[in-house]
Length: 166
Image 1 (cartoon, one colour):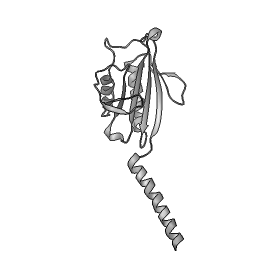
Image 2 (image 1 turned 60 degrees about the vertical axis):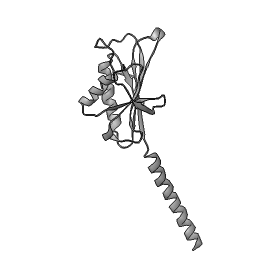
Image 3 (image 1 turned 90 degrees about the vertical axis):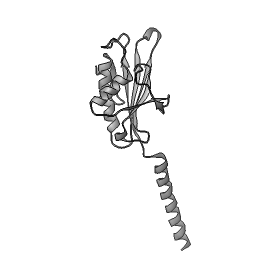
Image 4 (image 1 turned 60 degrees about the horizontal axis):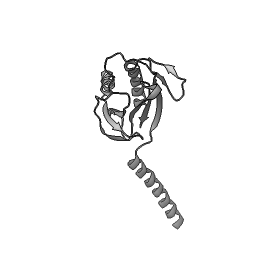
């Protein structure tokens, strides 16, 4: 009888551990990442550089409700951002409250190269999904819109060779 009680107690403890971990940390996240490059000398179609707001408006036009947040180097949201800033040189996350939470979102980090490579840019587009592939789909839309905003840009996914999209 004592052994049965110890086994039942151990099983109850394991179940409580996994339930508590799920509640405190949330579900697991699936991550997909693409690289978008803008070659040196690439010209935009508008006289002013494209902004984060331009990208957000394009995503809204296809049905998303983007909320924009600044991120640190690790991709953690730091707070709401001014969407009027240029895309190049900006780090931000796009969240649509209808698509999931708990760390899910679309993170875009644009660098701006200097020196001989002035005008060139490199971007990492990272989709983190807590269920399904909604943010991965948003990433595809965002990459297509980036190709429109930044003509000459190229993209590559984690499993595909570098391919021109714009």
